[in-house]
Length: 184
Image 1 (tube, rainbow, N blue to C red):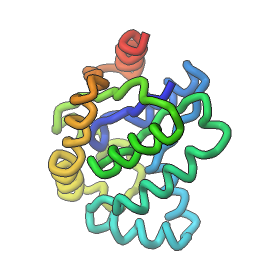
Image 2 (cartoon, helix red, strand yellow):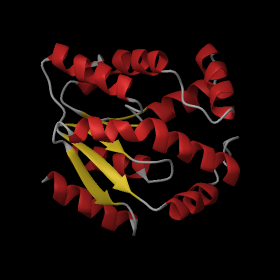
Image 3 (tube, rainbow, N blue to C red):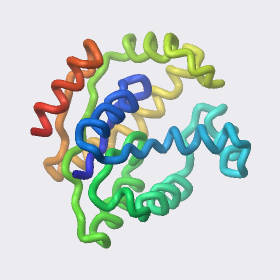
């Protein structure tokens, strides 16, 4: 089972991906986690990503695609996985589609978490990760980038009939229950 969990910053993608990972016993690959680890460890990638994120921009496609493709070649992902934070652009989505085709595999579902903007801002401000871009102004910039650059990815997968829209408001358990019943 290969699943993309999708939605704007603060939609709960990471939380739901972890629950899905446990429920279906498949790994969760978060590009955000990979980047945060690189930033924390002050690797070359981490330094590059820090300056990009500080500007409220997205990490360039070629960096993200290379990173994800390399990771997905590992044995633990052969029977399925949940992608969180990837793909974020149509170019990334097309590169991922080609990767799947090369592997002779297909995407099982594209889960879209729908959450109103005010709720997203409140969630991000309250989660206290201490990111340099977690001010209300920077959050609005990140959401604007999402709506402009990332939303077309949804349309890309809608054309393939893979998008499952989930109401992303409510308790973590309620949202997870909606996702599970959609997948089953």
